[in-house]
Length: 248
View 1: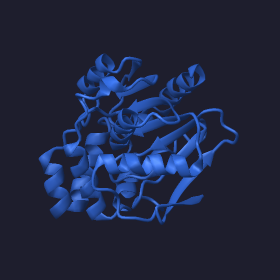
View 2: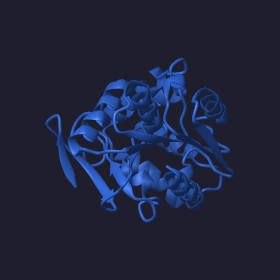
View 3: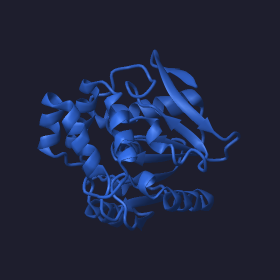
C-alpha cells in the first residue's frame, strides 16, 4: 500500500483490519519494514518504510526530529487513533522523540533495542563513507549474537544495501547526534522496553536508564539475543509484545 505524505509516495503494509489500537512499526537506520517480517504473521498493525527506505520515495531525513515530524504527518494523514509506536534502534529514537514532543493519538510505546542516546562507533561512520559493503557486513555481525545463521546475516545485509549509501550514512549520523536523556521523564504513556541481553550496539544500560526515567515504563530483557532481538527471538518478542498490547 502507498500513501502520499508531503508529496512523497510512502510504502506501508497493514496487517489486520478495524484495529482498536494501531501499532505502528518503525524500522532502524538504513533498514526497511522487512526487518519486522517475523512479526507480520502474528502482530497486527502498520509496518512502514521511512522516506527513502524500502519502497518509499524520498531521501531520508537529516535528523531524528524530522523523522518524528514525518511520523506525525503519517498518523495525521492516515487519521490513526490510539497509536502504539513500536520502534527498533533508530526507530525507537524516533518514537521517543515523538512521545516527548507530541501526545496526540499516542496510546503507548514499545522501545526495542534502543536508547535515549545512540552512540555510533566512528568506524561505522567512516566505513559507510569509504567501504560500504564491508562496513554493512561488520554492522550486521555486531547486530546479531555469535552463531546466528548465515542466511539471517545475509538477509540483514541485503536489506541495508537496498538503501542508498547517502541515506544509510545520514541515518547513522542522525543517531550519533540524538540525545533525549534530559527529556524522557516527560513521557506519560505506558511504555514497554525490550532489550536483547547481549546487545552490542545498544547496551542494556540504556534500557535501564529509560526504565528509571520514564514513569510508566517496564523492561523485558530477552536472554540469548542481540540487537536484532525481534528476529533472533521472534516467538519471545511476539509473546511479550502481544501481552503489552492486550493490557493497553
